[in-house]
Length: 288
Image: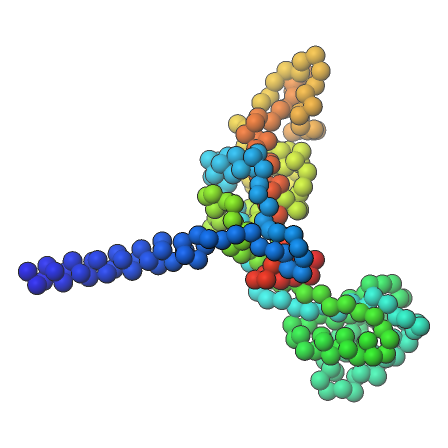
């Protein structure tokens, strides 16, 4: 009897702890999530998707797009970028001389050497990035010294990491990005690029539809399968359809025919256009 109760208690505690960790904790953390105010602004983020984009999420899910694409851009850190925006009364040669005068400062030596190299062949065009560092103290020190001699500069915060370098996003993905996504399609495999910011990278619905019908017509040697079941190849009527895809070469339909996207294809394109994780937030800051 005692053994049975001990087994029951152990199972109850195990299941209860799992439920608290996997169900209760996320519900408490995200269940009351609301739109956030954009950093240093008044607009809110994210915006409620349109009806077409909401329906497109279901098409995305039904076609298992998350099997090859993720929607979670990662970053490894942030850096400060100092850019010259105005030289005042000075000429480029004067600024180069000023930078050389900073070489003797031990705390700035490694940075001023890099700045000197970056402006060696600089002819004076502005704005001109001159320093990128993860040390905000150094960036602030440099900005203060520039200001003291009458040179205008601005400091920008940039996210860094492989996904950022690939152009897949401007910053890391955070919980707020998925506020209106039901269900969330994070994905776990990147046979194709991350899509968390595809609406910024490819805002043209026509191009997205071409890629869905014939990936190779947009991206050479693409390994993505063609989703031709989302399109109709039909004879041209009295006039070509305004929705017909502009396909050429080996991707074009037979003479007298046209490729027209179905409603589901349009919904899917609308969903992809809605993926725009490009707002600076408190938990994911950057300078636009």
